[in-house]
Structures are given as structure tokens and as C-alpha cells.
Length: 429
Ligand SMILES: Cc1cc2nc3c(=O)[nH]c(=O)nc-3n(C[C@H](O)[C@H](O)[C@H](O)COP(=O)(O)OP(=O)(O)OC[C@H]3O[C@@H](n4cnc5c(N)ncnc54)[C@H](O)[C@@H]3O)c2cc1C
Image (cartoon, rainbow, N blue to C red):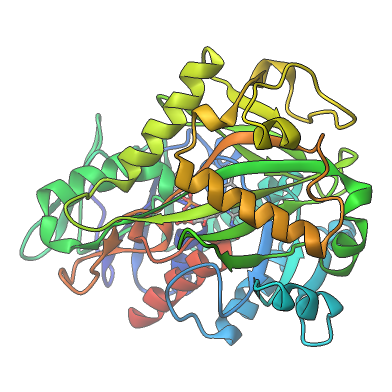
């Protein structure tokens, strides 16, 4: 990269996802000279989350991250993204409130021991997120102080007394400040930086492991209509907390690709695309001394499911067979939305540790007492779904090097990651 004259401060932003967007949006048109180094080859092959986000954005004080992002900033973030949609697309954004105090579901879940999670949400849709990102890129590019460098995968970061040097395979650049915003997909860079500067790691001990559940829309029509996204948590008898996550009415189950294994996920387009609803049921697994490798634990279980499935596939089982711990040989009335090439019919009990499968069973059975039909025998379970959390980073350690968004371990949603970026951006105005 060619050396450029510093105007005020020369800031390197690594990654162009939600957190970077939040950070840059605070500094457009200022005297700071901002260089965005994004590994995707251009904006069209780039995507918020690096993989595939469902485009559901929330305002909530109880989910999305472990930082305090004021609700006014969260609302501002939502408005910012919605504003980037075409007039026509704005009309198709679904919105609603999960578990407001008038909801009859709130009481029904509460009575069975669940904690209903309150949020306001907007569903933009996977299909629309690409154009939102492109529009943001075009708007940012119009400001003279923002420079984009696509195809720039950063491999190394060195902190000096007066600045920070970043390196990729064919470039080197130095900055007064560097903001790392590489999300979860940038974990190899984070691993390298935290190995070099272990003092910035505050903690790491959690991984969420579970399944993707799929059932016909008509069984959950009422709750989908009332709140679209229902999030509930339950402290089960094993001591583990189990939760629903990422509900996709008329959605599809998809594979999530990692370098050495695949897991399962789900999404839905803005206009719906199937007759099934899918959502994750996840068990939060926390470790204590001497174990320090929750990512290794989740990866190992994911790989085990792939080994049993004979390749880069997940295991699919009916709920009835899961309960009887026997391999599924044929499916019933529910047709999987994941293509045949992505799964093998099998037995999830061979993959999940007993403490997790017992926790999931208790959760599903209790859920069915609130939503009849949840535990029907031919409903589908895909294994495994895993949510990895990055190490929590202590941002106070270096003045010139900051981590925002999911790679900092403090956020896990578009709203919180963007808000985190904004809060940091404001400190540099
Ligand atoms: C399948 C899926 C669905 C999701 N659905 C939702 C949803 O519906 N709603 C929601 O709120 N959240 C959702 N999330 C979570 C949400 O996408 C993230 O919390 C959010 O995008 C985090 O923002 P970020 O900026 O930290 O990272 P990202 O948005 O992931 O951005 C990181 C960027 O850094 C780039 N990068 C990575 N490594 C490097 C490197 N070494 N050098 C240069 N660039 C690099 C990546 O290409 C990427 O563009 C989903 C996540 C996944 C995986």
C-alpha cells in the first residue's frame, strides 16, 4: 500500500462488517484518514458476518452482547440500516415485539419456568443485506477521508510505541491507530494477536452447543404471527441454561462452513421460502479451570458429527427417534429444507454429550407444554449447531489497538457490534 500523508490521525480498520460500519459512520467527513482493509475481493463478495446473516436486527437490553449499548444508540443503528433499503424493500421489512408485557405467551412461558427475552426486531432478510452493505460502502466512499482496500487479508499486527503495523501476504502498512473488526470469521488473526499479546485476553470459557429444530409452519403459526422471533431461556435440571435462537418462519436450514468441519444454521428470505419454521436450541456450556479451550470442545463435537455423517454433512434425526436413541431410517410428514447432500439420517445421541442431550430434551418437552406440536414425533433435529464466542478482549491495555464487534468477545449481533463500533468512534471525534 502506498504511504499516505496523515491529516489528523491515520486509522486502520481491519474488516468491513457491522462493527467497522458503526465505527466509520461516526468518523465520516472528519480529519481522520481512515483505511479499511477487508479480505473479500470486492464489496459484492463481502457480507455482514463474513458468512451469511439472516438480517434480523434487534433493540434489546438483554440479548445481543455483554456490553451496555444504550437503547437510543441501538435504535439509531436499526434506523441506519433500514434507511439503506430501497423504498419498495422498506415496505417488506417485518417488525414486531417479542414478549411485551401484554403478550399472553409471556405468562404461559413464565409459568413453565422459562425466561422470555424481550426485544423489538426488524427482519430485513438475507436477500436484502447485500444491497444494504453496497449502499453503505458507496456512501462511505463518497467521503474523501475513507479509503477501501479490498483483497487485503491482515495476517499480523505489531504494536509499537507510537503506532501499529499491520501485514498481509503482499502488503505492510503503519497506522497511528488500528481498530480490529474481523468478526468471528477472523478468529485466526485474533488467535495470532492474542498469542503474541496474551495480556489483552480477559477471559474465555463458553461455547453454545445444540441443534437446529425444524417443524411445519402451521404448528407455530400463532406465535410466529404474534412475535416472529421468540426467544426464551430455561435453566434445566442439569444446571445448563438452554435457549432458543434465530427463529426462521418459512425459512431454510443451511450448512455453516468452517475450514475443517460443517455445522448447521438457518435463515429466511424477506418473502419466505418454505413451509417450515426452523430455530436453534442451544445449551450454554461453561468451563472452569483447568480447561481453557471451549472452541476446541465445540469444534471436536462438530467434527464428530461430520465423521459419523461421512463427510462435510450434519446428522438429521426425527424427534421420536432421538428420544428412543435409535438411528432414523425414514422421515415422516416433515420434509427437510436442507438439501439431501447436506445431511445423513442418523442418531444425534452418538454425537452430543449426555448432559447436553438431557438438557435439550427437558427444554423441548417443556416448550411443547406451551406450544403444542413442538414435540411431535416427526419434527426434525439437525446436529450440531454451535455458537463460538471469541475470547473477551481487554481494550484498555493498548491505546493504539482496539477490538470491536464479535472479535472482541463482547458482542454477538448486528446491533451490538455496530453500536460497539459507534461508541469507539465517538471517542475519536
Ligand atoms: C449465519 C449467521 C447468521 C446471523 N444472523 C444474524 C441476524 O439475523 N441478526 C443479528 O443481529 N446477527 C446475526 N448474526 C451475527 C452477526 O452477523 C454478527 O454478530 C455481526 O456481523 C458481527 O459484526 P462484526 O463486525 O464483529 O463482524 P462481521 O460482520 O463478521 O465482519 C467481519 C469482517 O471482517 C473481515 N475479515 C475477517 N478476517 C479478516 C482479516 N484477517 N483481514 C481483513 N478482513 C477480515 C470479514 O470478511 C468480514 O467482512 C449472524 C451470524 C451468522 C454467522
